[in-house]
Amino acid sequence: QVQLVESGGGLVQPGGSLRLSCAASRSLFSINAMGWYRQAPGKERELVAATSRGGSTTYADSVKGRFTISRDNAKNTLYLQMNSLKPEDTAVYYCNAYPLSFAPWGQGTQVTVSS
Image 1 (cartoon, rainbow, N blue to C red):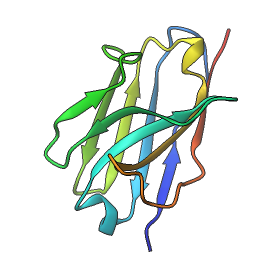
Image 2: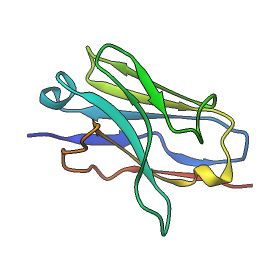
Image 3: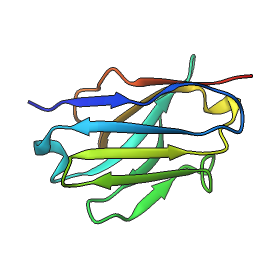
Image 4: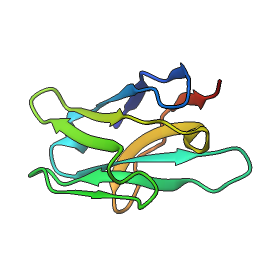
């Protein structure tokens, strides 16, 4: 059964940092590129960053230079290091396969950037 469990969110001040983690089932993680997505209130879900199984990456323009995606294939875990956070980064963050997010969505992890 495919499972995605996100963690690491929280409340942080502008300019702060957070590191998100996504534990994925091996059946999904071992064969797919993976991505971090986010959904802000009243907005559609959007891709934040993605990484292939070999480690190549792609980022949304809004997070380039501030966020870093990485993966540990041995642990079936995806990470998102978020630095220089801005209020507009406030959203629920999810992980899923990339480019087709075909797996059932997890519960996500809330990131709130506010002073």
